[in-house]
Image 1: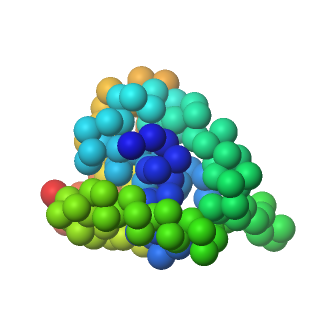
Image 2: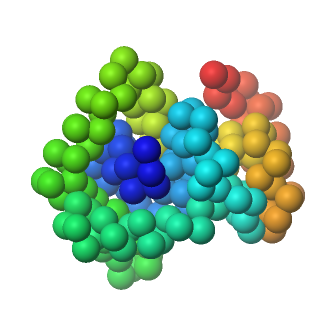
Length: 156
């Protein structure tokens, strides 16, 4: 499974579309981690786990007409959406994963709907080796405390 496959599945399991490059990076990281292939694509970045090839993979998928990228002009946030062809590709990938697909789908579906602060708190509380270059560690540690205090930090 390559980075493009991870992107397609992440978008598919997120309802077919996602807004924000940071959210997309983090969800693809979680999927790659669950598949035990995250070290192949991710390095520590200024905002935690970062895939240097993700932007190029997105461009390739757009050229192949599997995704569309739109920018919300009011928020200047990119929105990534699967095309019909992208949905078909995702279904094929899901079939290849077999029984593993349903638990991965539930996991990604859950995290695609949480606030970005929660998603970052979850990742930062579990994957310290990806935080060495982080510029937002102190800010995220406050979010971790906030969610832990309320007993809401997801335990898998």
